[in-house]
Image 1 (cartoon, helix red, strand yellow):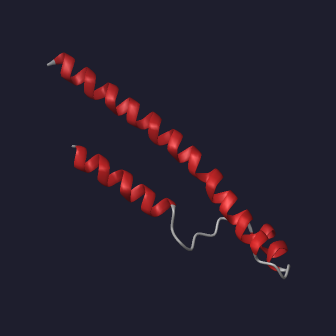
Image 2 (tube, one colour):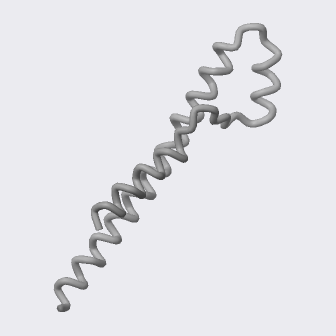
Image 3 (tube, one colour):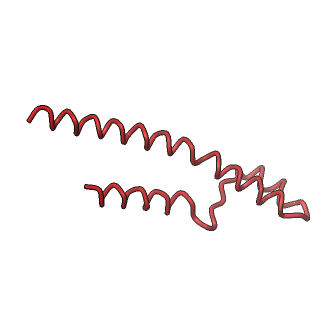
Length: 78
């Protein structure tokens, strides 16, 4: 059971943090690509990815606690 849990966490991290992820909307990308300096665009993209991780962590944590409580109820019933 622990192997499946660890595998699912690693798989989630693998898909959430790809090297070439681009999370900008089309308008933000158009404005930032028109500038000569690309460091601003990279900073905006990194910030969007950073903010996008927290909802997934919260939902995953809530799901884990629900799963754990269900498992605990099953053990108490037996």
